[in-house]
Length: 208
Image 1 (cartoon, rainbow, N blue to C red):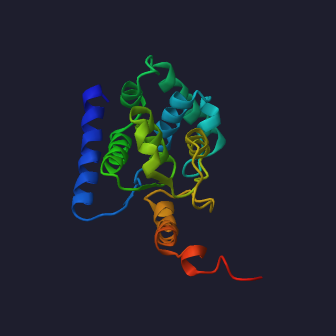
Image 2: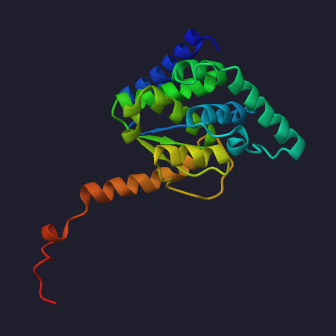
Image 3: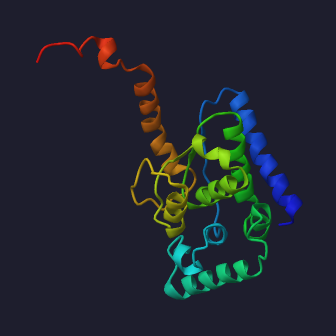
């Protein structure tokens, strides 16, 4: 992508987030739908974390060893042609895709509206990492719905210091893990906001 294309894609994602919040959404959930997007995700994670391509590149939909080697080579080639690793937007334009850029903008838009964003697997994780490099203030509003089996997903979580709500060895995208985690996050919010403390319940001064 050109820099302007990446910026416009992010703006599109941010606009979607703003419209959802304006319509009453109290929480946003990310997901992805596509084939081949674990490769640019791995490239982005490698670029932003300094990890080797082989360390963050997984099998995606279940490719064989020869195809995996070609995938690692493609990530390495993408990194080699990306000279400005200190410029997150340039990295996104060089290595990402429109869907990852839009997801990154979606995360930023949700955080800007002060709404929690539940992030799904490796593609959404790469978008979150991109968003965090561009706007570090997004992280307090984000939750990792689950830990994907893709190696880049674990690197994202470790890099950002995030603990996943679920670890079910899922390899799905489409927001599956994030949607599964959502009821647990809702329950946690209700407990924190509505459950009586020992003092309020009058049990702290009872004799043993």
